[in-house]
Image (cartoon, rainbow, N blue to C red):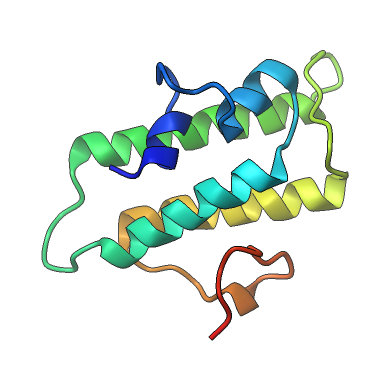
Length: 128
């Protein structure tokens, strides 16, 4: 499994400094670490074999990470919740949320949309 992805899985012993740790512990949307995670998710999507099913544990791990991140985003928008996400404005947060959801789906389905399909592009993806 990819190292950055593994670091971001809830419960990982090596999560310090990961995107998920920064978001969970500090309410910080760390764009740099998000894009690294996103790039690994895109890499996973490219490596999926169309002839083989996705491993159940792997799919669960991805969906668990997605559920946890989306719950934190939801908490950010809930008036009675004290959790707030910093370092992004509302428009950016929605764009990052879309990129995250699509990358998770791509990692499971093996199909990732081209960067040009989005307003917010991953700066780590080389343009072809």
